[in-house]
Image (cartoon, rainbow, N blue to C red; front, top):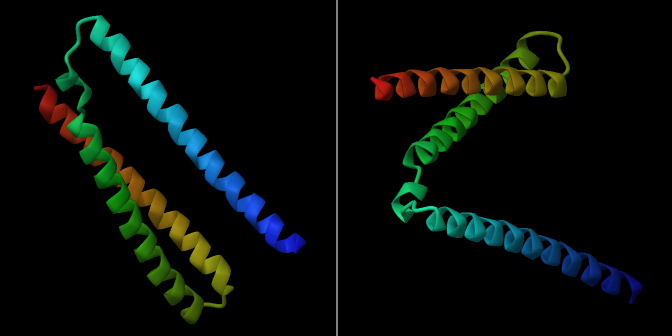
Length: 116
């Protein structure tokens, strides 16, 4: 019976923590928006579509980089005398990092083009 109670309490605590974090995030966002509205900004100015596109691009390129890293990690592990876990981990980090750098370069060039 102790295991069931322990599992229940852990689950309850995890759900409570997640709910608490979401509450704090939403209330902070609401207060921030109310303060900005009091200063005369319109709700239209809150929507930052460039940030959403940027996050989507970054996440997509990161997933592609990790997938390429997994494929090349498998190749390195099979062709060379490298431990399998090390090859996968190294290649995933390498190509994930390269994809984030590519994302940064694309965002930077896009930002420069929109500034002109």
